Image (cartoon, rainbow, N blue to C red; front, side, top):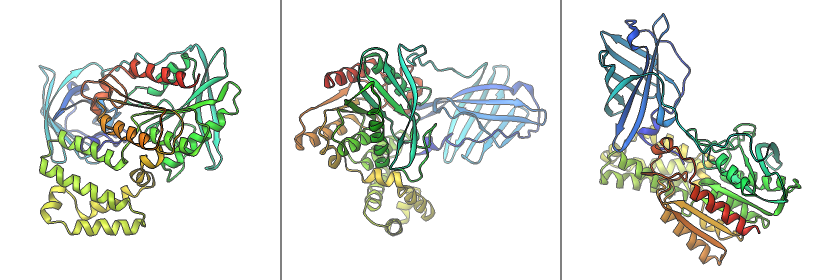
Length: 468
């Protein structure tokens, strides 16, 4: 799931290094300066790095807790211990004064309307992150890089198949990633959840196929891909495993995370030979409602008042309804623009929208993947799935809220006459199934645990029980 608002704008654009001029070459500022930016309940560690090129200073910024990488400043003005650095592409200005006796840089961080005080300390190196669960070779199982074809789409898919060394044929789990362009390990902030999960399952005697999304790694890119297309990739993975003598095709199923739960549901509804599906934080309500849930969390974090939250909620509900209709893109744009033009000037200002920004917003909603996702009805799909289903969510999931979605999934399955399912809400876990404090996204990178052992064991035990 995607971030939104001020903090997602922050540090999401990566540029090449650009040397810039300064009015003074003072070696004391050379090196790394680390501070913590506090925005409501969110804390982000920001590192500034300065180096003297001989022709001036090269200055970069790194949002440690967003894994931004090095982002250069286009302008550096430095004179008599006073510094101003600017990156107009992301609208960031940092201005302040150095106290070299205390190795401090006292500054104001500005982006858009936001102004925040931040104190930087000089440090020897950037903070490192420990990821103790990441498996290391040699593995006690076979790990083979493979490729297979989705012949209908005309693409090659690249992945890794892990198989226990002895016994077989084995039941198999095909791992399906969440939204966004993900690699086979579903890597995020140095965590590799699918590598950890595949290692765990394979050690338990379950073969695992995980693969890169379209356009990632060795997998062919396809313009205009949707969740339905990703489901066809998942079914192509099933067909590939049927060619492997080590795999028992009657015991092959899907484990999907977030959007991967949607993909698993769509694929299982299309095929009658899927042995099981595991939905990890999969949606039970409409995707547009999940997006709105995420936005409301962000609005509250940024201190938006209840009246403005209600106005923004109404705005998004209406434009989702309009873009979700079975009409042409041009007609959808016209409908939304007419709705916007009918608003009062006060409401337009409170929404912080102009005709130009609304047109851009609507065109984004009409992009193939998002338009399909916001029109997707979990009830229509899940009611057609006949294989055993395990649906799990972390109690602190702030992206796909646990109670709402699990309750909806259970209601769908009960009303469709499905009896072989299990619903579990896991206490203290977030959207990534880490043991969490708040569950908010800014915490993901700070947690050393990649995948809760409780969740790992629940998944493997359930699969083994249903593939006897």
